[in-house]
Amino acid sequence: MSGKGLLALSGLDTPAAGYVDGGFGRRGAQTRSLSWRDLLLGSSFTATGSRDANGGSLGLWGWAAQSSFDGREGTFSLDGEATTGLLGADYVRSKWLAGLALMHSSGDGGYADAGTGSVRCPQDLDAERREVLCGGAVQEGDGDVEASLTAAVPYAAIRASERPKLWGAAGYGTGG
Amino acid sequence: MTLKLEMGGSLKSDLIWTMAAAGARSDLLPPPKEGNGVALALTTDALWARTSSEKTHELAASDSDVSRLRVGLEGSYRNTLKGAAT
Image (cartoon, each protein chain N blue to C red):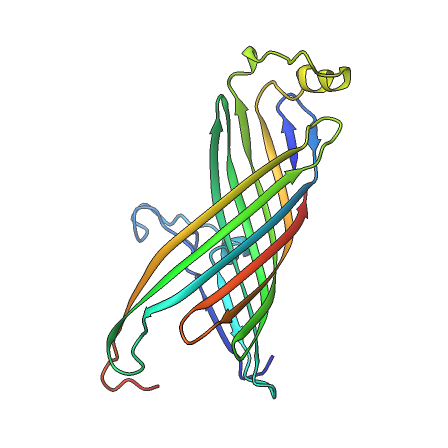
């Protein structure tokens, strides 16, 4: 990356940054410290290098965000929050752009099943699955759920002519 | 993915995520190279993603697919201020 590269930071105005309820300390200062997590969420950056000898340039970008989810299927409900960070690098030359992004996402939440009492165990299960699925461990009560995912997403774009621009991406990731 | 049961204990399963997406953007009305003017662009993208959890002793395997198709118009107006430097 050239020293002449452009670095732009934005999105640092997170509402968690020292907000005082009631306005300007009228009810006394209510503040809390700003963590690295607060600072990163909603932030993004882009750094673009100057052109190399081949006429291309390298770019580096990233962002972090937090979102919430809420779903229901019958008597089962699930909600929670997920935090995602993306870091990508790409190279652009002439009509082409190609890059690779790395993504890490983690989320947690809770689930509840209000209708577990009326669930009937299917009759066609083998003994092992009957014990697991119908023995009470999986069906009864509420609980928490956690998940994380790390993925790689290669992407490319081409300006086919003067006006249209086409792009594509594919991703694969694993987690637990 | 880890399920923490209210009654105690936890159930864990590995996740696999695959995704494919493609899109296009075309200027219907290109932005002016100089001065003021309106620009209009047509943008569209399609996305497909699958999340799978593997079968374990306690949990059955699962697959969930999600797909999305978007078509939109992007409009903008360029206004060059007097005395602006480039």
